[in-house]
Structures are given as C-alpha cells and as structure tokens.
Length: 424
Image (cartoon, rainbow, N blue to C red; front, side, top):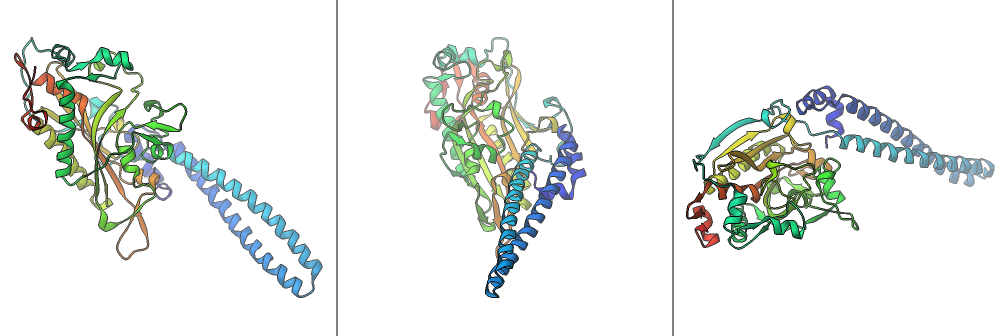
C-alpha cells in the first residue's frame, strides 16, 4: 500500500496519477488525510496525558515523604482518573488506526509515468514482437481436438474428478508438462535464481502482504474449516518469505524461483474463449521473484522481461510484448508487461506471462526493508515478479503451431527433457 508520507506530501499528484488507472481517489485521499489528522491529534493528547501521569506519579512519593498525606491521596485519585482517560484514548487510537489502515488498503498502487491511459486490453501498447506465425492451412486443429486425437489431455476426466477447468494430462502430455517445468526452472537457475518449493496454501497475512486481499477474494479458493487460501501464484508465498525482514543492502537483489500448481476461481469465465487450456482453474507455473534496491528496480524489470522473452524465443513461438495501459493494470502493479503467444489454429493471441514492478507497494504491506551499510535507518525495498512461464497456454500454442500430419513436433530445447521429439 502507499505510505502516509507519500499521501501527505503529494495528495493531488497521487489523485492525478491514479486517474490513469481509471480510479477516482479524491474522496478516499481526503478520508485518509482526515483520519490521519484525527489519529495524530489523539496521539498528541495521549502523550500529554501520559506525561502528566508520569509527573503526578512522581509527586505522590514526594508528598508522602513530606507528610502531606491528604495531598498525596488527592494526587493518587488524579492518577487513577488519568489512567482511565489514557485507556480510553488508547482505545480510540487503535480504532482510528484500524480505520486508517482499512482506507489505505483500498488505494491502488500509483502507475509508473510510462503507463499509457486506457480502459482495457485493447488500449495496451505493443513494445515489440518476434517469431513467425505459421500458416497451417484450413485443416489445422485447435489444441483441444489435438489433445483428444493424440490422447494428451482428458478434459472430460477432469470434469468428472473435479469440475470444468481441471484438465488431466496423460501419457506424453503429462511428460510435456514435466519437461516444460524442468526447462523453465533450469533456465531460471542459469539466470541466478534460487529455487524454493513453497506451500500451496497461505494464511491471510500472506494474502494481504502481496495484495491479494482485500482486492481479489473472489478469485481465490478458501478452505472452509481453516483460515487458509490456495495460492493463485507462487508470488504470494515466495514474496512473503521476506515479510517482516530487514535485509542488508549488500544482499540485494534477492532472486528466487518456484514451480507450483496455481489455483484461480476465474469467476464469470465462460464461452468459447475459455475452451480447452485457454482458461483453467488449476495450472502449473514457474515464477521468478526479485527483491531489489529502489534505484535499480526498473533495470531489473527489463532484465526479467528479457529472461521471459528468451524462454519464448527458445520455444520457437511467435510472441508480442505489451505494456499494459492504466485500465488493464492490476491493483498492486506500478508497471506490467504482458507476454502473448500466437495460437495458429485458433488464430488468437494468448497471454502467457505478466512481468511487473510493484515498487514499494507490496514491501510496505510486508514491512520488507533494507539498510544501507553503516546506517541505522531502514528503507522499503522494491518487489518484482513474473511468470516464467505459465504452462497451459504455452502448451496450447505449442500443440497448435507445431502440428504436422505425423504428429506434434517438440521444440528442440525440450527434447532432452521429453526424450522424444514428436507427440503422436
């Protein structure tokens, strides 16, 4: 979330910049400032009362020593009254701080100056593209038909076992999934990321820390009997490893990668655009996460974008990189690049990765700080993450783009992992 310092110093600038996200923050900012003023006034009263209490408590002993028993007893009564007043002030302070925190949690992150205005994905800006779109002819099959033809994915079985959006990969299809996960993790390791294997469930504090709560409750699966959420992405547990942590500046950047299944309700998803692997409720993904010094976070963002771009290039998929407009930018992000690959049989672009800089927005929620050498003062770090990569739509594009009369060709970089070069 935004810091109070940011809001106090630049309220009009924050309101103006959040308009790029199509978010009218004027009333909310006014409420924050008013509540913050009330909080500080209560704190001032509490401090004055506490100082008076401390002084009167000292006076009691002195009065008793001087034999002024009546005056000492009167001072004790005053101390008792002051304690009651301070107790009430502290309660009021806690309530006001809670109200202030709830208001702050409702304010989105400020978009980076390079974020273009716009209402949705049609207003996103193409940064660059690569690869060649294959001409498959009229006989090309979409991936869900290829999956059935070669017995790679059983969508009906997934529906039987769980429900729609929970595919079952079988035979060589399952091996392709495993190959992609291993390939993505190996590439991340080569790029200096440390692999971690986090839990697949997180508590509320973790969900708040990375901004899933209170913004995305409807998109997460919550357990009925325990206060846990199934993770929508490995970003949540991996970033929360550093919740309430103070790092030394020399430790930055911190680079972690993780493979996990991910779970998303995708409420309201239906129709032809969600067929097959286009939109599922459980999927596999390799995530890369960095914690970086604020002065270097945008260089790091470009580095992470380049890493994902190299993955797509090595797979031989046609792709484009989009800078998200304000209306398509997430609640927590300051700047996001989406990667889309072209699925030739469907003749459509499929999003396979988002790479984002959250600046200090998540770090402020997480209380994730760092300290420069020789300094006692701490600063908020910047957090970044990206999909590297999400598997379902990658698999959909691979199946469609590399289909031949003999079967589906496997990209050369995956053959050492699959130990076969065609799906047939």
